Image (cartoon, rainbow, N blue to C red; front, side, top):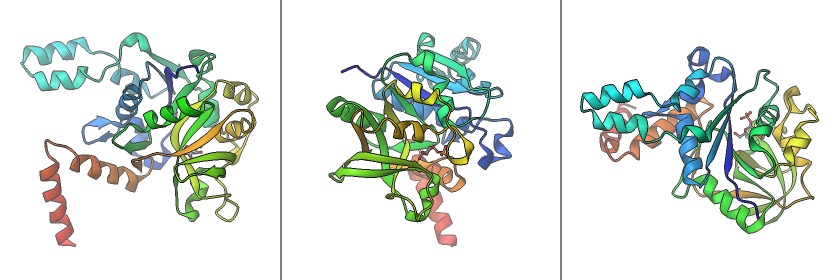
Length: 291
Ligand code: G1P
């Protein structure tokens, strides 16, 4: 079985749900406590064993590239001032510059098209995709859980969770075959179906392990829901030819592409912090009492 060494991070989206904040700042740079969303995604991938990091970005989102580039001047200034913690904070997360790659999606044609833009950087090997809007708090990194399934079953694996039926039109939805309550065989996939038509309430969240054949299907540029080139539609066409599973991962997923989800993530991550979780709790309790 071929190892999964590469991860693609599609970060070209416009972030319209977060305007005006996203006018000049990419949503992937929004901080949850003190780290931008994109850093959580990269750290999850690295903790899962990924070695190459591929960003599909767009003009105007240069801050993402800057975040992963070493900044010798700032490092030097912090070191000179003896600010060791701050120095550590801006260096420890940095991947080796030779293992970080950027490519541009110049037209907003959908998630499927964004992934297709990474085809040459990925090449002919299985790869992972992480959508940084979906932040997952878990003991074992979410992507690592998918990779463990991949090593056992091969083929394609997506992270899934049950959502209320009225929310199916926000997600890619599974039609399931065999299902042991943790791992579900994928028999069909529909992008953003109406609740009445949804084949289940099992939804894809932004973690995928896919075979490179997906690129041939995406190359056909077929339009789907919202007239966009959908990743889900291309994945649906791989069903049958290769094993395909949905994993109900262990962990809590926050939808940081949405205001309340982002706020919830900020609260949850603040409470989980050793350095000021206690003070955050006391502050929140104060607000709760005010009613
Ligand atoms: C994308 C995918 C969808 C998936 C979702 C997870 O939708 O197209 O299948 O369920 O991410 O967050 P988007 O959130 O970009 O509309």
